[in-house]
Image 1: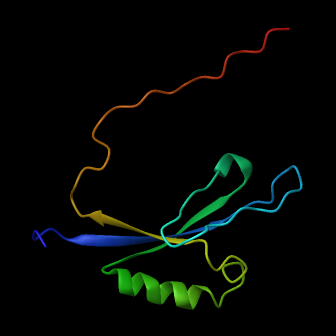
Image 2: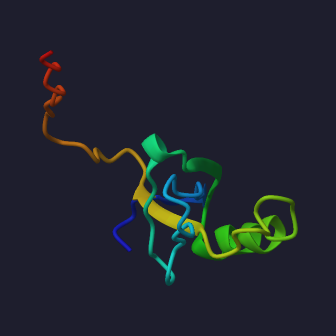
Amino acid sequence: MDGQSRVHLLWHVRHAEPADGSEARHFAEEDDCWADEAEGDDVKLLGVYSSRDKAAERIARARLLPGFREEPKCFYIEEFTVDSDEWTEGFVTVKEPEAVD
């Protein structure tokens, strides 16, 4: 490794039931991660860990708890370098056009 510290953020997503009555879509495989908070998905940060193994241990414990056990595949481990910029460019906000009567 390059001497920089790495951390592992552990996320869980509770996917909302779609308004059209279809089944909620869950993560399909490891490292699959998506959420639509505007549609009601609930994204939670469970913790920050020093290794992927420690984050995986937390997943095993969380899967025993209410809520998490109902969506046991919807965990995601995200790795970051400490003291490293992640968003290096600006951004724009796109506004919805106003409705015309």
